[in-house]
Image (tube, rainbow, N blue to C red; front, side, top):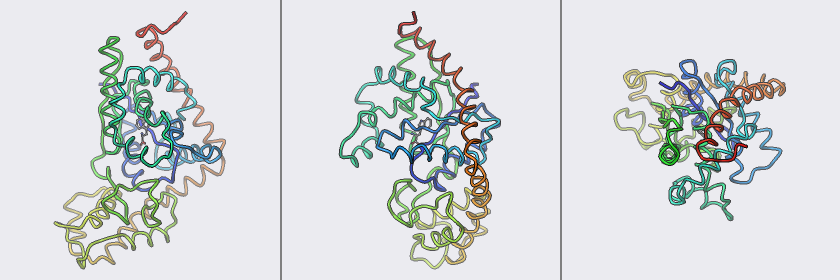
Amino acid sequence: MNKRIFSGMQPTGDLHIGNYLGALKTWARMQYDYEPIFCIVDQHAITVYQDPAELQRKTEDVAALYIAAGIDPEHSAIFVQSTVPAHVELAWVFTCITPFGWLNRMTQFKAKSGQQESVGTGLLCYPALMAADILLYQAGIVPVGEDQAQHLELTRDISQRFNALYGETFVVPETRLPVVGARIMGLDEPAEKMSKSAPGANHAVGLLDPPNRIKKLISRAVTDSKPGVDFEDPGAGVRNLLNIYQAFADVTNDEMKEKFDGMRYGDFKKTVAEMIVSHLEPMQKKYEELTADRDVIRGILKKGAERVTPIAHATMDLVRERTGLYRG
Ligand code: TRP
């Protein structure tokens, strides 16, 4: 079986516990069983306007958070998308074989384009670039949150279409969704996924939030009108807090029920907040160390790009041969 895994995140917004539980934690856990490549996708970020100086800084910040969250740069390749130009080269080939209708029906495109005054073509072609990220490395497994499942499905369709048109070239990757924690919801709005761009001040717990703020945020989280945890039938907000606790603590459903069934909301929220703080504190310490000397991060990103570039080049050689693009 193909042991290569690929995943990535955009260097926009502030990462929160939903990003950690839905992605980073799974990546860190999986890494030693596979050959992992983790990317910071700055070219996806500019599908909507980003402040240039901030984008530079956030790209390194996200790299530091990957490492702080347990991704081991000695084992996993960590690099920035735009430093390996083969991504856009392959993306162009994919946009040429991807029917407009496939892109136009993507729910993320519909949601994001609705928020923009002027919609760049890059926002439409976003999934073709994502397919290129993955297929460039012939990654067999792609651990992503549920919100990316549709893009992954499209990646599979694109790889199959290329293979049908030009002959067997690409591995058709599988999606790997995390078991718990794939879908952490907003604290103020438990019907909506916790999001980097949501406006509410009480919406998300940021990975860099100090303990006091975390306690305050959790104490303000929406619950339901019951006095305490009804484990068999919790309201959406309570279910979300239970999911958050369980995803951090890695405990079974039985242990969860034993601990929380009937617990009053004041105590429940305190317990959840303490669990979050105990996991984020060491991560924050590591992050502070890493961002104090940016040369270390820059070195890691450079080394990461050097590691993956030969793989990318090998795939592009094959793509040139298959498609007839001029090789001289
Ligand atoms: N679209 C993904 C997101 O917003 C980020 C991403 C880009 C990605 N390329 C990828 C994820 C390749 C997995 C694999 O979360």
